[in-house]
Amino acid sequence: MGPRAGPGRDGLTVAGDRGLVRRVRRHHVPPWWRDAKLGIFIHWTPASVPAFAPVGVDMGELLAQRRPDALAWSPYAEWYQNSLAFPQSPVAQHHREVYGDRPYNEFARDWEAGLASWDPDDWARRFAATGARYVVLVTKHHDGYCLWPSQVRNPHVPGLYSTRDVVGELAEAVRGQGMRFGVYYSGGLDWTFNDHPLGTFSDLILAQPGGDYPAYAEAQVRELIARYRPAVLWNDISWPQSTTKLAALLADYYRAVPDGVVNDRFMPRSPAWIVGGTGPGRKLLDAAAARSAKADRGIVPPKPPLFDVRTPEYTTFDDVQTTPWECVRGIDESFGHNEESSEEDFLTRRDLLWSVVDITAKGGNLLLNVGPRGRDATIADAQLRRLDWLASFTAAAGEGLFATRPWVHAAGRTDGAEIRYVARDSTVFAFVRAERAPDAPTGATPLVLPELRATEATAATTLDGRPLRSDAGVAGLEVWPEERPDHEVPIVIAVHHAEAAPRAPG
Image (tube, rainbow, N blue to C red):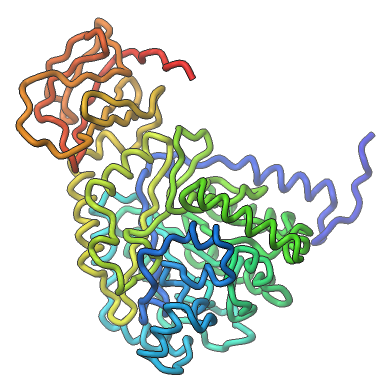
């Protein structure tokens, strides 16, 4: 016989706790999310008014140096308020020069005034044109400011919310363009409840709010679910309650939105947090953070007990992942609009388009952040230009991207070109880009796809079905495309009824 079920936490039984956690863990990621491939993330808070963060910062190097103020040099403009707490940080120096001793929270007035020129329908049209299938809006970032008229009152800073329902208006506009709408909520940090300055990763433990915050955060997330029925519930940093309480919240979310998706940043409160806040625990955390930043070239959150999709930040995986995932990153190096970003700080067209292709080939989505201005609710030209690049590319190549799945081989290489493969039914789509800009015109030679072998039924076509000449070559399937691989914009070849070449050893 097993242990007898007795009264558990939160009014449940111990057995009931475990059963609820198991049921939530068995939730499956819906097909719409796996088909999406591209989403738009929006960081747009009072920090978008000063819109300042240092550029060209190597955070991995700063963390490796174990600097006690490393996070104060964050390139994320949305961390403006935290960086102000460090007098020698670039943000603090900028603030003194431009704003003197003006308190951060006063930027909320400027942000709300900028709503007078906001056109959510225009945003939604631009996002939909990129081919994005979903939009996730930051509804409350670490500064505690809410983008909806929340009925859950902040006990420390009254009125820290928009009187205009920005979340609701954008949700309506996004859904009107046929996309799904999701919400981001900063569950792990709220500087109105705990303003401990964040200089290192271990400070994240000391900055976790306690007291009346867990009930406040849960009530606000439940309010967001009830009001907006978000298709994506995207939490950040951690979650201030136990696994059992989190399971109850997520179970209610899935009941309200059966095809909803939850990200992997709901790390629940646990006794390990206490250990992490001690001197030895902090040293271990900071050392681990430094190693991870170097190894991953970005941030890969630890796996919590309950989640649907993984969310590596400013980095991707090298191979196909069996767990659904999305790369989350900005169009430049920031989350939130940064006036300091120059053209060189933004993704190039070559890197942006290949990022979508590469992530899709490995089973992921790209959640690309757009940071509107805080003063006038507009999107800067440099960001709009990149949205236009995506729109042009997906209009031409979307048939080979959306609703596909990883193939036997994710990547390949041919003479002077890189290849990424995806598949749908019996068709393999090969995305090919030249490794370098051509110095001279190329002759009429075939393009070899080494990972493909021809069968009697094999045929190669353009995406819209025009036949292409193809032959079974010794090194792989030979195809004569209508155009040679480009250096910036990948070409796409559809190959029907082909066989996969054996994987290389190792």
